[in-house]
Image (cartoon, rainbow, N blue to C red):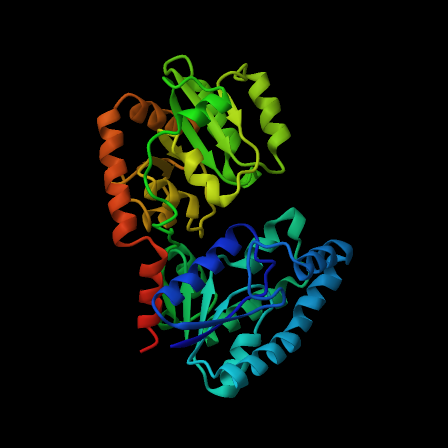
Length: 381
């Protein structure tokens, strides 16, 4: 097939990884893919266009930026029409973003099916975020529902996200749940990197609890520190945060308050290509909190690297983990429940190994980008 992949993002962070992995998966399956976006075809690359769009977003007032987002429909439609005439695709694959209906409009005009990938209910998400306040709120919700309802297929990353979109009027027949995946070649199980433990100043005999990701408030990182503090007298353990982010100073303050400076390490930013080296030193990988609609890629990466995983007991996480089979789930939001799960795995290395082996099998069989690409393209026939 010839696939025209459109996105209107800066192509950085998790979204950049997701875009590049899906494009690469389509290509590995021997389909032709052309990427159309305002930043060009590459992701996770700081080029001139990325810098310009990032500056523009910071410079203009929020309402003005939302009007520019609406205006992008004309520019996106122009880009897509030119690409369609030249490339003649069989399918348009669009990564959903607020206010953007350009792929739906171009697909309708040229009678080409459009598959829409929805990773979050962005109108709802931006309505709740202090740094992404949404002024054209009602309009954003209406356009989101219209876009999701008028794609030929709307690919959502979790069952709760599907249920949410149904509640706002998107037909059930349009919606297909495909959780996120992992690149099995990049995330191969490996022995603990003892040289890294030495670099980080962590004694090799300790049980290492780990979190990977941007240090943001909604990841529940203070909850994780509290839970670790509760078990620190019972377990010779160490907690490692692999990443950096806006709440780092608050976390460091809390760590000092609890007297855990010698038991907790924050690595700072680690490029995605080196993440597997850092996760290799982790015995028990944790995702302490998730939004109701998310499909956390970090969990799949933990599983691919054959780690015992602890995650919140939420419907969206049930799409990924079966409790006591390929991960351990705890009552969402509870420090006591999380610390109990951490103690249970710390005390039972055989159980950790059982969960880790099953986790790796699951990503090999289901939770990987190639499997996702095959499933999505099977819907086009």
